[in-house]
Length: 227
Image 1: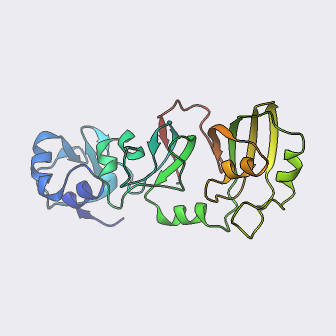
Image 2 (image 1 turned 120 degrees about the horizontal axis):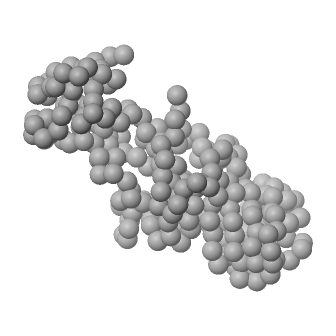
C-alpha cells in the first residue's frame, strides 16, 4: 500500500481542507501506530492512522439509505438535499458521493450513494437489468389484467418507441401492490400505472439489486462492505 501525505488524506476524506490540517491536528488526536502526529506533511499509510481512536474512513465509500420523503437526490437543486442527511465530512469527500440513480422528491426507500464511479455505471447502465422492487399505493383498485400487461414485455409508454421489459406485479390488496422492474426509465413506475388508467399515490422502493432496507428507519443508512 502506497504512502500519502497526511493532509492529503484528511482533505480527500473530507475531515478538513489542506489549509485547515494543522489546526485539525491540534484539536484532534491523530495517531500513526499509536504515536500522535503534528506534522501535516508526514507520509503515512491509510491503515496506520486513527483520529480520536477511530480508524480513517474508507478510501472508497458506498452507503445504502432509506430515503425519506421530501429530500432531493441532487447536488445543486433547491430544497433539502439527500447529502444533508450525511456526516459533514462525507459531504466534503473528493471525489464526491453521488446517488446511484435517483428517487423523486416524494418517493421513499432504498437508494445507494457512492464515490465509486465504476459501481455507479455498472448499476445504472441500461444493459445492467438491476432488479428493483417498489411498494405502490394506488388511487384506484388494481384491475386483474394489469399483472399480465406488465409481464408481457409489450407495454409502450407514452412518447416512447421501445416497449418496457417484463415487470412482475404482486397484489397485496386492492390499492397496494409490489412491482419488480429491471429498468430505470424516467418516472417509470408512475407512467406504467398511468398507462393502465390508474395513479400512484405513494411510492416506496423496498429493494435495490441485492440490498434491502428492512432494518433501516426513514433517513437511516449503513455502509456497504465491498471487500
